[in-house]
Length: 455
Image (cartoon, rainbow, N blue to C red; front, side, top):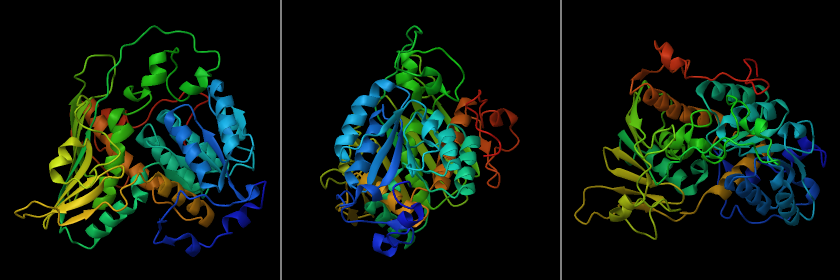
């Protein structure tokens, strides 16, 4: 940092005082403001503040009191002034620098960490460049566009000894940590089946005509590593339904449930993956609105079921709401079910808590943990800041995020190949004896937006 010696900053607070135990950080009130002098704050560069997520992350970090936004990096300069004004008002009047190309901030020692909230086709390359420049990274999910570049981003984090936290907040939620502990103690018995559900309502779209991009938008930079194409407002808004930019709903939201399920179950690489699905709702979206995937692990079978045409499924901020129990579960669109020998555990994302059932006459849960049923974003930011200061790997380390996202990639590849079963080599992460599937394992990059072989 230019404001204070970086090493002094990182070592200022002992890990024990920060509440780090076993690699997990839990604070009773992580969102509480800290009276941190301006020159001691963690300097952040926000890469992408146009979508709701990037702006929300900026506000969340500023609310902590120990972070400040030094750069606003967004390809749409129309956002610069309103964001700069709002962030300055929240950090004692200090105005962030505004750039359209985030690479302009890479050599600035005032920036300690980058927060990446662009569309996912940019995530891996931005992470690699930031790690190479000595910046720690908070990267939104999904953290890559394809399996190959995902492993490259992990390699960069390790090579440059950077802290990289992925925005899968479930790993920092106290109630999920309690569920993980319950499973680790063997109270549910051996689990051989895990079901993951992503049920929501996502409309399709129709292409309009290509047009010239707005004067304020650097479209070439926005398109970045994706194949060259003319500007179309539908791409700018509906990118997550197009293969060049994303992996569909499974990658955009389903990854939250898949990552939580994989973590709770304690599994890494599947031995085989099968996925079928298609888009039934009319329109021009490429990715499926309906998917069913089966992941076979040595220890268990995991399934993933997705529907995008179910408006009656309530995607609220709570999986189990207001103490309601099992009869209300079907109303919630995102959940995980773990079937053990001694009971079944239902886990709700986004503050939903978890419950365990056995065969009883009244069908009431034998365990119900909703004490910390709040959105775990503050805990996740807390874990990132603590990890940066203590140089400890965060709860959602990039390696763990990469392994979870591999499940999504494998499933999408299987689905795009008409439901072909893929055999996976856990040592290389590659698909065995299937050149056609491996052609979907990485993309062709266009200069200068290239993920290189040597990170």
